[in-house]
Image 1 (cartoon, rainbow, N blue to C red):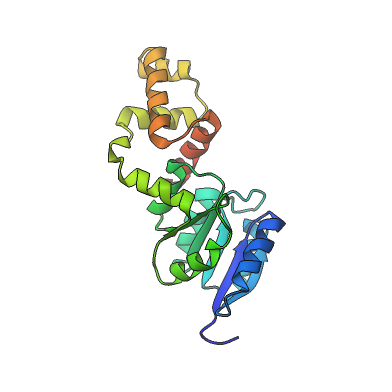
Image 2 (cartoon, one colour):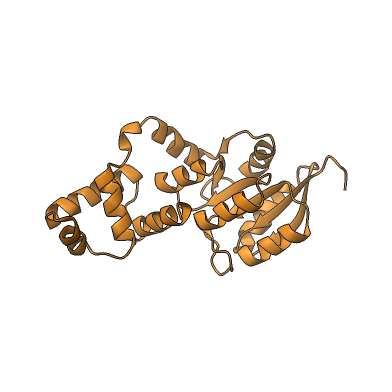
Length: 213
């Protein structure tokens, strides 16, 4: 392997995605795939044993000892600060993208876009340059144009409590507010975050909590 070769690890629990990424990367002779991982356990084992310049990783990759999502990428940032990251995701919501950007991860690809973006994103990650596939770019641009969509302190607290398992009625009692007020503020927070389902709001809240532990 040449000293100029970019060493890449692919982490994804979907074999078809791994094959597609591998196929695209093999078109670029400057890139070499040194390992593949199906979960965070295999990923950390590979990183401990092998030299790696760029990691291309799925966002949601359950089943490993080190978790997935923001929790996983936070660990990677702490333990391997020089490792360049490209994140693949099916969850195209502003809250998730904002969380990744806060970690300094600015090469993000949506699985709904062409897999052909992966090679350019890998090169960009190595050069410390941002790269977003079209669906993600739309979200990033939308966020930059909508700074008004920052959660208020009350909305953020409701998101935190709801993510912690409390119902709207329980939050209302704890905050000494009406159920209608809490419900309205929860809906407002979801609109600002670009989240439509309660399950996604809970995931966002839990990722935020892990990031700030």
